[in-house]
Structures are given as structure tokens and as C-alpha cells.
Length: 156
Image 1 (cartoon, helix red, strand yellow):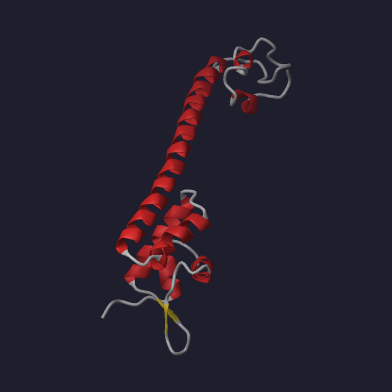
Image 2 (cartoon, rainbow, N blue to C red):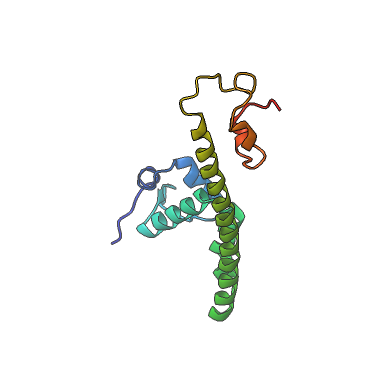
């Protein structure tokens, strides 16, 4: 017989809270077994499904996207229909991830540029403000490196 876990054990194994597990149950994403007394019982498959849900949510997948992925096959009449719909959904998710990766790559380049720019202040004894260091070489790079506008003071 497969090992059964209670909700607290599953929460500990998955590194989450009981409330989170109940939330996913309320959303129809996780359907534990129940004893006659109402105690939730989970098997390894439940734990694997939960950790997948948690991973997707942690990586920015919306609850609706997770719900769609979890329910597509149940709505299909054939394996062919299921395959086509799941593939389309996964392709859509890949497009979203690719766009996000592109945005993150752009941000990475900007961070590297900002790091390079701020090294020009090493050894500077002036106060790190526009007033304290009016000729600051970093200040003059704010037009090229947007992140520097957050790091440096707001003075023109």
C-alpha cells in the first residue's frame, strides 16, 4: 500500500503551509483523499503535484495558467484533442517565459553597466549626492543607464 501523509506532513515535505495546501484544494488543483472522519490523506503523487504547483507559482505562473494546465485533459474527449490543447497552452507559456527571459537579460545588462559605472566612485571622499559631488562621473551616466536614476539622488 502506498504511503499516506497527513496535511501537516505534506506541508513540511513541500516547504509550504497548511493554509497554502488548503487554498490549492479550494481552487480544485489538489484533491486529497478523505478518511471517514474527514482527515485529508495525501500520496506521493499529491506531493509531486503540489511541489509542481508551488514551483510554477514561485516562477510567476498565474493561478489561472496553472488551473488551465491542470484541467485541460479533463475537458477533452480524445487524446489527440488533449495533446493539441496542452501543446498550445505550453507553447503559450514558453512564449511568456521567452519574453520574460529577454526582459531579464536586458535588466542584467543594465545592472552590469551600473556596477561598472559606480566603480568610478571608489576612493572618492565626497558625499555621494549631487550637491556633495557636483562633478560625479556617475551622475553624468544617468541618461544612458536608467538604473542609476534609482541609485543616485533625484537632484538634476
